[in-house]
Every structure is written in C-alpha cells, then in structure tokens.
Amino acid sequence: MKEIILAYQGEMTLKGLNRGKFEAGLAKSIRHRLEDLGPFKVHSAQSTVFIEPQEDDLDVDEAFRRISKVFGIVKLSRAVCCTKDFEDICRTAEAYLGPQLRGLRTFKVEAKRADKKYPMKSPEICRELGAYILSHHNYLRVDVHNPQLEIMVEIRDNGAYIHGPKVEAAGGLPVGTSGRALNLLSGGIDSPVAAYCMARRGLALHHIHFASPPYTSLRAKLKVQALACELSEYIGDCVLFVVPYTKPQEYIRDHAPAPLFTVLMRRSMLRIAEKVASKSAMEALITGESLAQVASQTMAALACTDAAQSLPVLRPLIGMDKTDIVAISRKIGTFETSIEPYEDCCTIFTPPHPKTKPTLAEIEAAEANMPGLAELEQVAADTVEKIFVRIGDQPEF
Ligand code: ATP
Ligand code: MG
Image 1 (tube, protein in one colour):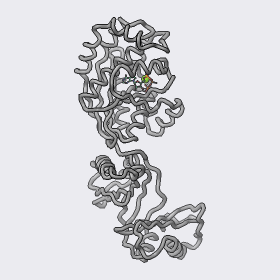
Image 2 (cartoon, rainbow, N blue to C red; image 1 turned 60 degrees about the vertical axis):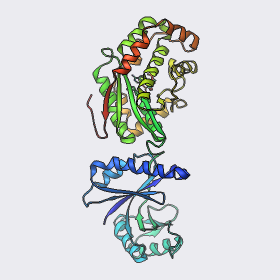
Image 3 (cartoon, rainbow, N blue to C red; image 1 turned 30 degrees about the horizontal axis):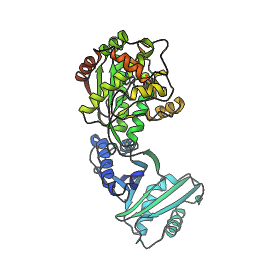
Image 4 (tube, rainbow, N blue to C red; image 1 turned 90 degrees about the horizontal axis):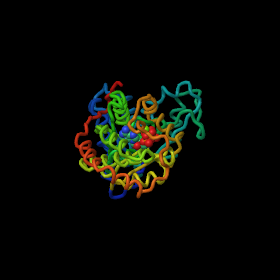
C-alpha cells in the first residue's frame, strides 16, 4: 500500500491574499529538504501539503522526520489514499490500520468532510466504518473519550485519506516568507536558539561569527560551524560569515576605558555585522541577548549597542529565562554542541568590573579617542570568510 505524507498548514492559512506566497514558500522548503531522498511529488490543496513518493523504495521515515522540522506546518500524518467509494474506504482502513489494532482494546473513528457534497455525513461515516472495523476484531470496543488508536478519515475533493493520529510538527511560518536577516552566532547556548526562534517566524537566515585567533582557536570556529549545520535542518542551507576580528578587538582593548570595553566591542561587532548584512540585502540583525543576563545586556548597555548602527536588532530571547532557553536548545538539538567548552571572543579581555549603566555620551566620547577603529572594522568586513553550510554536513571539532 502506497503511503503518502500529509502536512497541515498552520497560521499561514490566515494570510488572505498573501496565502499563495506562503504556500509556495512552504512547498519550496519541503522540496529542498527532500531533494537527495529521491523523487517526491509535493503539492498543496485545501490547507494541506501532499507529499507523495514517486518510487516504491523511497525512505518515507526519513522524509517524515525531515518534514517535521519544516516551519509552516502544524501537524503531520502518514496516510493512504483510496477512492471515495465507502466500501473501498472500509477495506483500505482495515488493510492499513488493522494490523495496528491487533492487541488493542479500544479505538475510535474520526471523520472530516472537506468535500461537502459527499453523500454520507461525518457521524454516519464514523458509525459505519466503526462497525466494519469491529466486525474484524473480536476484542475491540469503541471508546470516544480515550481510545488507544484513533482512525481518521478525510474525505477530500480528490479522494479519501486514511490515517492514524496526527503528530505535532514545527509550527511557525515558512522560512523566507518574512524576509532575510543576519544572525550573530557565538558558540554559546543562546544564539542558536535565537536563530531558531526567528527562522520559525519566517526569516531566511545567514550567520555571522567573530573569531579572534590566536585568542580563539580553530576548534572554536569549527564548533560554531557544527552549530550552524545543526540549525540548517530547520532553516535550510545558509552561509556562515566568519569575521577576522583580532585587530579591532585588540585596538579596543588598548584604547578603551576598561569598564566600557564590552559595550564598545559589542557596538563594533554590530557595525561590522551591518556592513556584511547590507552587502547581501539582509534587513535585520539577530542576537541571543536576554535582558540582564550579563553586564552588556542591561537596558542601558543594550540602548548603547542599538545606537551603533541602523538595522533593526531582533532579540527573540530578551524576555526569556535561561531555563526556558536551555529547554528550547535541548529540543532543537543544539545544546550538547553548545556546552562544549571552547573560548569565544566575547569572553576574552573582559574587564573585572564592566559598567552596567553606560551612557551614550560617554561611549561616544570613548569612541572619539579611537580614530583608527573604523578603518580596522572596514578591513574586517571586507576580508570576511564565507563558509557554505549545507543540510547534512557534520563538521568535526
Ligand atoms: P551565547 O550563549 O549565544 O553565547 P551569551 O549569553 O554568552 O550568549 P554574550 O557572549 O554576551 O552572551 O553574547 C550575546 C550575543 O552576542 C550572543 O547571543 C550572540 O548573538 C552574539 N555574540 C557573542 N559572541 C559572538 C561571536 N563571537 N560571534 C558572533 N556573535 C556573537
Ligand atoms: Mg557567548
């Protein structure tokens, strides 16, 4: 029996006139994820994407696993399709789900009629199909409240679809339908979660990472590359821009008042990120900052950081506790890589007593004493390394 995958669209069904754009974005993401698994036909109808293997031996388990990470889908099921002839529906349901019912005590049938012209109403379909199933399984009974297995029948325009319970999928909006942004990716726990949250709202992302060799090692960079690969299961192929940041960072260390060092460095990083983003038509920056987590993430420090450049800075974790962030990090599979102990440029040269309430006036005064910084930032932006991150890559570090 040929199984297909049904992917139920979420919030995007509310998008009115823009719905076509969202559906096209979703179909594109799904095709991209399945590309190397063989030929699958992907098409949308009635708020659902139908994913049909075009050959017998395609890996439907792997296709299902991958599609469960595609944003824009709220639920998924594996199903079989048959004609809308009721006898065919009964026979197909028994052949497909009968083996799963063996050994169970309770079940229920749920019917949904997207084809409103179908001659049987939903309660009648449930009753009649339920009776048919019962006649094939001696010890089974119907439990409408707490069944061990739910059999779903969807009567659609082009046929009937039969499946077990739907499973939760990734939710959100298809990647690329909300624009493009550049994510500041460190090796920590927070920034991969920030990328995930914003991609889930439909942003197409690339990453930028600041490396300061020899203070930061090659392995630290490879760790960031590994995180970018892990994220690509959700956000698709992307570019990791690696900025050679040693010179600007040393310059700031040598010229800045120590208590202001971190905020001055964050401003410098954002200015470079803005240059890289603008070159590739990215409309916003993303960081994993969370209010009051560290000295550079107080309101006053964030205000100074924001004033450094003109792109919007999106901070999806701003109101989250670390425990919430860790829970998402575990769920999306980046946590184990994030906790590997490698140095980050943000944790070198940090002063013992960073100022938690810097003012923009004192920050700008400090920058006026750093006339060589703009040139070093420009060189760093111009010599950025581009690493292509593809789904399925697994760099060792
Ligand atoms: P994370 O767990 O993501 O490292 P953090 O709590 O350690 O975050 P900071 O080190 O202050 O916080 O960094 C705040 C944010 O700045 C990070 O979430 C990330 O977006 C960005 N950032 C920090 N270091 C780098 C880096 N080396 N390259 C790119 N972005 C960075
Ligand atoms: Mg960090």
